[in-house]
Length: 421
Image 1: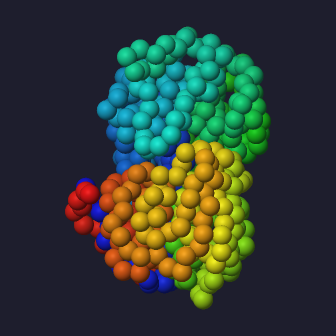
Image 2: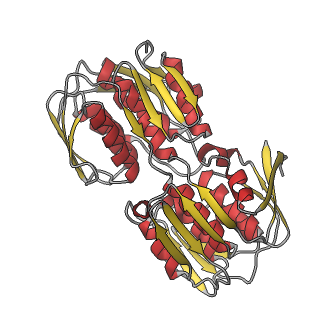
C-alpha cells in the first residue's frame, strides 16, 4: 500500500483548480442507465470511486470512454441488471444503480453496499421508498432483489433528508407512472446537479434545489450532456490546508455558494477570504487561529465531510473549541491519530473538545476512511518534522491526486510504496 511522507512546515502558496465533485459523479453516472444511448458527463474527476462505478456499469454492458475528464457512457447494450458484491463492496454509492435499473428494466439485483469503515449508514430509506412505489423487494444472500412491472408515483416523506435516498428515489421516479412527491428531500448541490441532468434527459421535475421535489413520470428518457459541479469538499480541504499552514492560495473552478458556511467559519477563525468571478482566495499569513465551534448539518450547513479537517485545524487554535457531528455520531476515528501528532482532543459521544496546542509534531499515522485521511495529511503539512500517513488508498477514493496538488502549492509531500504498523 502507498503512503505519504510529509515534511511539514511549508506555507502553501499559489493557485490551483478544484476538480469535479466525487459525490455528484457517483449519482450522475448511474443516471445514464435510465436512457439508451450515449450520455456525456464533463468535468468528471479521476478518482478510484469513479473508476469503481465505471467498472460496475461496464459489467452490466455499458460502453465507457473516459478521457481528459470527459466521461461518455453508451447504455444501449446493457444486458445485466446485477451489481455484484465484488464491485459494490468497495463503495456504498454503488447502491445508486438500484433505482435506475428497477425503473428502466423492472428488476435489479444489487449487493448490499460497502465503503468506508465507520458507522452504520443504513439504506432503509431507499428500500422503503421503492416499496411504497410498488416494488417487491427481498434480501437474499446479501443481495437486494427488486422487481416491479412499472413503479407508481406516490408521496414520500423522508424522516431525515438523506442524500442517497433522495438521489435513488429521484432516479426511480422519473420513469414511474404518475406523479411522485418527495418531501424533506436533500438539497445538497450534488442532488441539484443530478436533477439538472435528469431534466436534460427529458424528466419532468419541479422544485429542484428545494426540499420538495415533484416528479411527473414520463414513458422514456433520452441521453444528454451535463457539467459535473466542482467538488466543494476538495475545495474546503484545500482552504483549510492553506489556513493551517498560514499560506495564501487562490482556488479556481469553485463558487462560494457551494461552501458558504465553511467560508463563514474560516472568516470567524481569522482567515481573509476573497471572492472573484472564477473562484476564491484565502490569505492566512501570520494567522493566529481563533477557536471556532462548528456543528455539522445538512446543506447549507457545515458539511460532515469537512468535520475531520476542521478538527485538525482547531487543534492549533489559540484556545478551546468544540466540534459536534449531528449527522454521523461516531465519525471520530481520526482523533486518536491526531493525538499521535500532539493534538489535545477528547471525544464524548458526538462532540469533540479541542484544546489548541502550540504546534503538532510529525509521527506515523494510519488512515481509516476518506475524510479522516485528509485530516491526517493536513496535520502532517502543519506539523514539525516528518509525518508518514499510511493507507492513503482511502484518499485516492475521493481526492484527485491530492498529493500532487499540495506539492504544486509548496508542500513537501511524496508518495512511496508503503508499509504497516
